[in-house]
Length: 295
Image: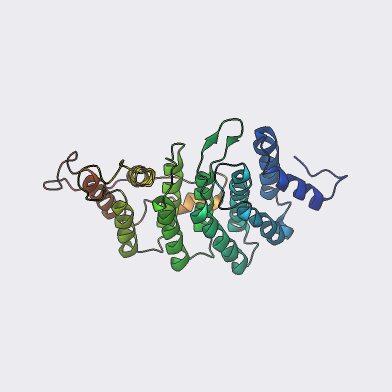
């Protein structure tokens, strides 16, 4: 995957970026993505990273608002490659804060407005906009340019994405990817439990069936309620078991070396919300045993 000597890097980059929108998985997944991520990872773009990312991030607006067509591929795979771009800066501190913050604004705007939430598309392969967006949120959450305010915004963006009305039920691991993004935010230890607990309660409220008479409320759960319920369970599991980062990212070993701050308290908060979702199924909170944290 070395850069060919007979072509300009600029021309090759434009060609590879256009391939991110290809409807052929062999072109998109097996050629464009691995070549671009390899060049990002080996430093090919280090001196050009700002311009590279600025050009790349425009792909998040490609056909935004559409649903059911192939335009989602460019948006989703832009997020996938931008994730590696942000992670490169996280490791080597190549970019000014304003650049990464600007990308963050565009990323969060796209993520909450994305309507096409398909995971696997027959004939086209993986779209996975939510999963790729979650990975990008996790990359931004690792950035030294993001502190308490920005991390709180990322939490709200995850909630907005889950609670938004949709006809898609997420069934391709998106709940785990979103939960890991949140775990990354929690491990930064910048957002207090006084912020996180109401945020969990807001999500849990989206899983409660509205009080209606008879069948007036329609089918339940709605896709959004089902997606949010699955996310809360994924978050519970990750809080309980712990998570680890990527072995190729030097900072991840330190970031995830110890359990998330306030882990025991947050576990109880999530348990209470999951229990309240279906009180006719789960045992009451009375007499519950105190959770013991180990590492």
